[in-house]
Image (cartoon, rainbow, N blue to C red; front, side, top):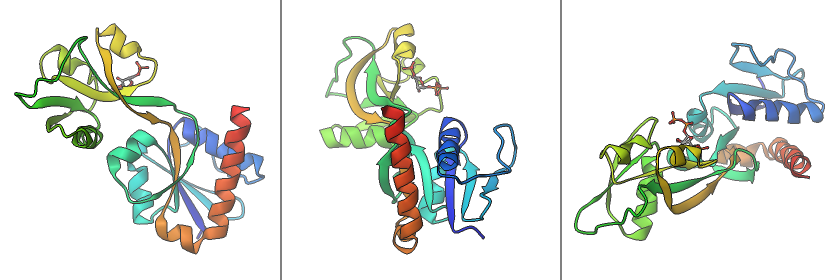
Length: 212
Ligand code: PRP
């Protein structure tokens, strides 16, 4: 059995992590981009990578099924998982924002309805402002909601702003910055300190090299 398990969502995070390992001389001989395998071990069976659905990464790490995870801050915030967030990997940059029709203003006489793929993020944001809202959980095409009267506004990710623009919506309020984060299970952080610190350092160096 491997000593350290790392949970990754498929896609860009996956190749970045594998490249980082490679630079440190750790190879995963079975790994290929098009493989359908879900578990990969390095040659020395110290590290094990498990490929999971991105939104499940915080669950694997919180429960200790994985020691380390790499996940977008958006998914992490929405999960509310009790884990250590140890490193900002700097890629996958975008932001959470409230968006709606231009000039949309909050009418305090009625409850604000907010459609989002991230109802917890939406609730937390408005709670801090002291505004009580009704959230409507959607799974995609969130921009549609204010256009056809399902909600007053949306809380969503804005990357280029293209989706909002093409649908006649605007950012009404910025909420927070998002990027990929390295997370660690709280117990593993204490019991597997050396290996975990080594991994954090290697990832940290790789991030610095990317940004130079
Ligand atoms: C995300 C997000 C926005 C869009 C923002 O949706 O929910 O709709 O990307 O990107 P932009 O600012 O660069 O336009 P996604 O592409 O995941 O599609 P979905 O609507 O199916 O969730």
